[in-house]
Image 1 (tube, rainbow, N blue to C red):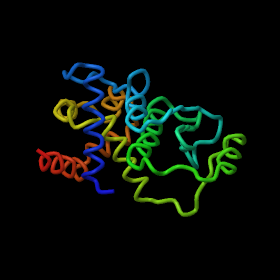
Image 2: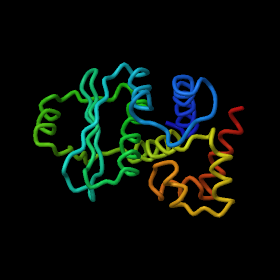
Image 3: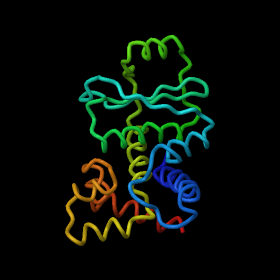
Image 4: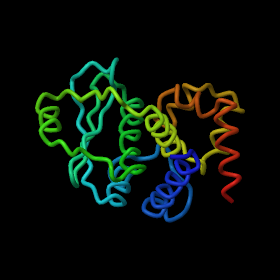
Length: 195
């Protein structure tokens, strides 16, 4: 998947989010995940029942995992995560569903075993590119292009990345990434090229 596709998918979801929650006006922050939020919209778009479950596992090695079987998806995330990281990890896993609707478990025994033991399966051949695109997709969903001027004004007015992150309810590292000169230019160029 190309980065332009990531941005287009996020833009489509935000158009639906805005219609559902604000008519077509301004987006209020933080972006909601549940209760007519992004998870609900992506569930409707993909035809999946999406659930999330917080589990007591050490989140240092793996923060979240996605399990999908037929028309159900379960997002598992570590209870070690704070609210901002939990929101981001849930959104990243949901983005996987949005970006690759055909990927799901064809091995129900492994799936059920992982669910019963509450331990996510770690695949040796994990696709790093898909993970990176999901990170960028989640960032674009939670800090959408439509709020760029607000985001840039917050930084210009002297607010630090932590203070900005609190407004968006995302990890400070995500705001730092979003406001980094290379990502900012990349996303600005992509958005300007799509008009």
